[in-house]
Length: 147
Image 1 (cartoon, helix red, strand yellow):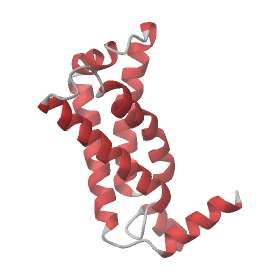
Image 2 (cartoon, rainbow, N blue to C red; image 1 turned 180 degrees about the horizontal axis):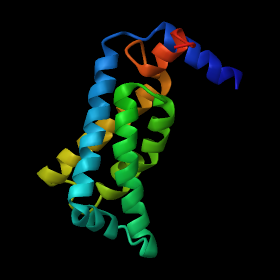
Image 3 (cartoon, rainbow, N blue to C red; image 1 turned 90 degrees about the horizontal axis):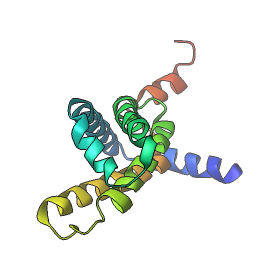
């Protein structure tokens, strides 16, 4: 546990302010994808249906949509950022390694989705280390405990 606190302390001291705008954009993008999944559940079910999970298709579709909507809002606001990122990681790992890596991997449209999923996964890992930053509700609550 001491190592995690050291990493968090290092990340708080070396957090550039411009990366907060990247965090906000990432959160809004994840929220947008969650809204797209809710509005077109059939497309999400087709993506998940290719993975042959049996009964868990519907539960997984609800988990993905709910996690994207709530997690995207939390990441954009900078509230419980590391927790929200941790909830997003299994979804993006699945998107990068299972959904987008199929027989159509070299097609242009699927390659764009793969690159986009990979970029979001890398950014989530960055914010797992760096956390919320100065422009966040977490930072405000830490600096104003009685407010």
